[in-house]
Image 1 (cartoon, rainbow, N blue to C red):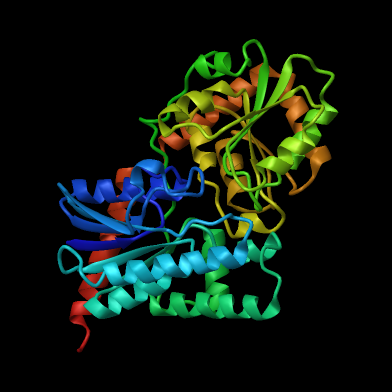
Image 2: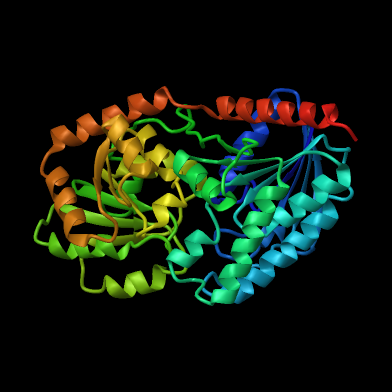
Length: 415
């Protein structure tokens, strides 16, 4: 099967969604499919095109399983929402044009959101080639932007919601990561009689992420040896209330054996650093190379997943599964009754408190800090649970099955 993929990130870009799509593409290629990936030049780490990729608007490379076309993403400051919208629009326009001249005629189009607007390119290309469109939703937009206050203008919100519904209806299938997200979309569509919305969860590569000893070079490099390490690793932006971790650090600062590590980058980093002034038990570490992921995860005794109120119904952080694969316990501050809570409870691998509740988060962290036996038990439980979960190969097989179903349906329908 020939598959045309439109996505905002792809290896060697370091965005989590790029890692997801890269794995899916590689697994589909290993199953004999040809793919042409249309994506952005790597830019996620510093929100500017990486130096070695500068010098042009577009470049295409032919590889064993097909081709990759990389386009200029018009990167902007994440806090400048209007500029980001224009940038996403520019990239989407380039992607649509690039998709008019793929290396081979596609049998199906796969588009990934966010950004939501990339679905326009997916719809246009699917109609141009008269093939099915599968729209993969990692985070539900505009819900996330509305919840964090990034979009407040009622007219803009209505326009975004209208575009969202239009793109879902124009897709042959919309894939989401959890039952929560499926319920969200079905409600917006006022039902799903055609079974358009499908749940295909993300995956964890348990061969690539394995439990390791906590005393490693990462700990030595950042002065963490002989400490109990509580870590937040990931994006520092609107959606993640990492200030809760700083509140916990302030409340537990008398424990000289305890340190809080904030590993990552994003638009909120500077404010978090300013807020942490005077807290000598907080260490900030920049985003690390993908090759160090297992080492970074292993360096923590306790990991945290933090989402603002309402966001756990629109987003499922992929790092949760990496934490479990690393054999570390997790303390999550999220909405009750959502996928993160269900996962941690099913795996018996962590503690869940309500969203934006600094006092409850501090209490949960303090309890685990003082109980190394419980930390070990929860970590081992999480590892066992993900070993039975979906692998990258299994997720690719689900997409392959979906593509085959949609292509068969399309060819059997009257012209």
